[in-house]
Image 1: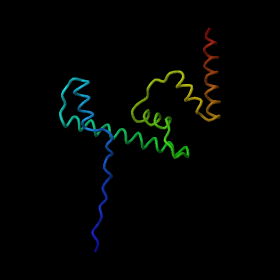
Image 2 (image 1 turned 45 degrees about the vertical axis):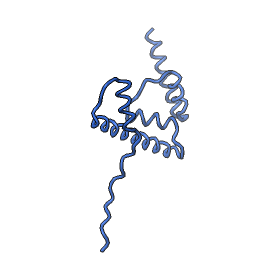
Image 3 (image 1 turned 120 degrees about the vertical axis):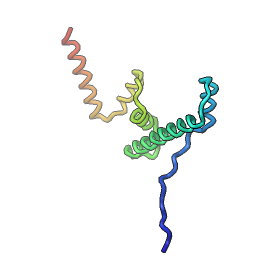
Image 4 (image 1 turned 180 degrees about the vertical axis):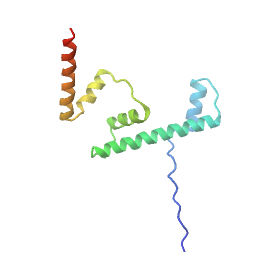
Length: 121
């Protein structure tokens, strides 16, 4: 009878290197760090990067693309690591990427807001 094959979860990707974290803490923060703290930060950062990249890949596939693009990374980072405030140019770029139906809804919402605001004056 053949031996049973046990498949383990693939090892976590290593994007962050030990010396990079250690050097940053030493040189920039002017502090010392324990080996376990550096390894823990590496594990957490690597996990976050892997999660974001997988999400970005899924977003690209949903758009029927084989290329991960800026908007995929931005959306994945916001979903998994939090949002940041966009400049008005970035906001406009995000809006312009929407489909015509969504653009119509956005336009209506803006017009409704303007009419409501003018009604108060």
